[in-house]
Image 1: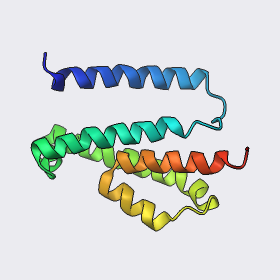
Image 2: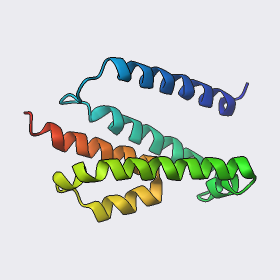
Image 3: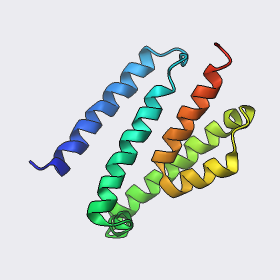
Image 4: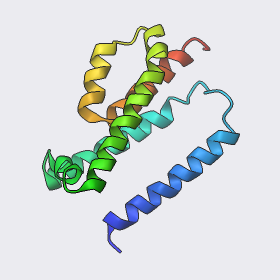
Length: 130
């Protein structure tokens, strides 16, 4: 097995564990809950930069236009980020985040920017509890 076939399996298991455990354990975000999406954003950024250097900056587009599965994955990513954006927007406005700037970041980097935005929002919200 190659690293390209192992990483999706590992991250899939991590996602399942996270979704199931957070459904039963987490009642309300804590003061340091911003660190999880912050670390995920940084880790994904590093992995993405490695991909860009290895495959080129537009390698993702080749994959998304290769076949119907590539199209489906592209639609899924756009839908997921758009729904997340819709739900987070009122809270981000309440914390006076720069919506235009975050919109540019999210549109240009997808989940990297979105997880960074979630981290920033949770950080700002946790400041009220300090």
